[in-house]
Length: 284
Image 1 (cartoon, rainbow, N blue to C red):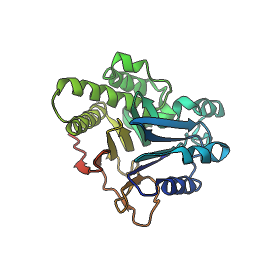
Image 2: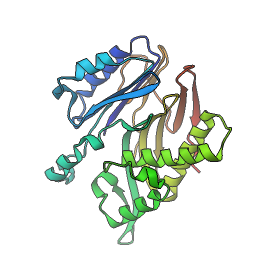
Image 3: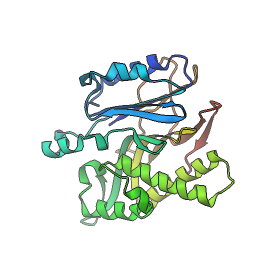
Image 4: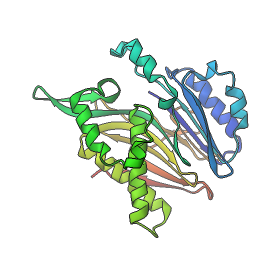
């Protein structure tokens, strides 16, 4: 699986993000990487569909990062050992599928997997999206969910990952909530939008374990979700948090003080004030 990194208001974010990429060398995340930061209130993103050690611009671009928010991601594609052809693997290894995803000043990263709960030959089967996305049952479920994505945002989907799909699903809900909840403060709108996305996934029997990072430049969502009826197969993803120097969220333990985030929790961070509020992931 992929790994994510988020640092907010750290005194030495460059050191932390370097540590993240060093630790990632011990993983199988070799299929792309990306970084993002805020400059002049706008996100700047740099990413490549290959390992960061193969990029001669990597160190230079890390040094260019500035501002209160540092974001990093390393990607892993399902490999040949899982019955994925080399041709499909190479097709999936492209810039369009590399995180962070961006639309205007919104960015999104995902670490985890989604599974479609399907009836096959009279039995319940969990179909791993990355492997079975061409399965008729999976296609049907994803098409149902796709109806919640606004037409203008459907046109912005460039790749074929479940992560980008979740990004534009959330953005569509968020955009609609902003219109319907005019006058409501930003944080409850973001929280309600996230809850709604989780409810839609559950409605169509999509089980998942996910670490999700979303930001619109003013607020950040950092969430650890594990929604499943099959806990023996689908387990929570590691997501560490350290509050000793600003805020640090990472799928890799970058500091000694980092502790695992409780399963099914949502943190919303105000970039300007640095405040961080924790919410349960209400799954009705």
